[in-house]
View 1 (cartoon, rainbow, N blue to C red):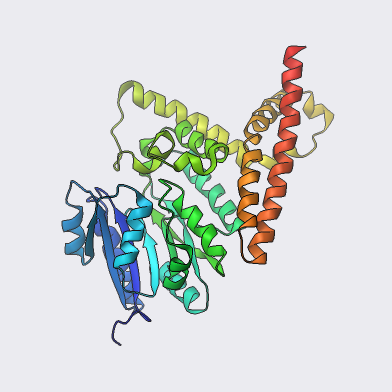
View 2: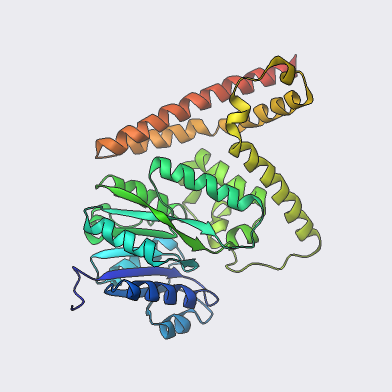
Length: 352
């Protein structure tokens, strides 16, 4: 069958200095597509690389498009403009997608979905907190029905309808795209996982990673309007650094604290269910009190998050996602208000 836009799948890979991983990513896509007899093209969008990214991608069989954006949303859009297919699949340069994810994406779009995505797992070795954090993210992403950018797909029609990726964002453009696509029709989160590089958690301390994730709800879309402090996870050094001396010691301490914090959130039901008075009066009760105070301060971020979720609900065109987002906004607002009361009580106790 000839490769026509109606049956052609276009893989779009944004890349910047990805010579270490781009060949593997392209070959994995090509082998998976060929194994299911999928007509396809692979487009690597080289955004101002200073290494051998373009050459390696070309040798691996990809079409290379060179741009000078240094912004992932614009780079993704440039790849989509160069693509000829009706089905667009965006894959990060450090991500390996298998035939199950690729086949599932194509089948979903053939059956009427406007888009969707596959969630990711991290390659090893990684800090201990990272797999647990990813597990929590996969759970919440499935609940709200969105996907990250490691593997995100949509039809050409839906891509054009939402205007592509938001080029005002230097991060979080994948989540914004997921929400925008939900307004156009059915958005599918696939069961198969893709595998992605752990370099973000290897290059950043655990507290830095968690800090970015916690502050984002407070700043909302303004956190990602420029290449600044809150977008370092996306634009920092692409390859793991060798840590020595004080830096290595700090990373170890920071990652250990991050593990404790992630465990607190993973065991959230344990801290909110009623405890017998005997346990409340024990050492475990003191731990619960400290955890409760910490969660109350963190919970303050739910109030601005509720505002942004509510605004997203208002802009939804379809009732199913609108109801889901409104329910989430109500829950976030209620939990945020409870956190305000708890923090107020705690501060009053300190002052008395």
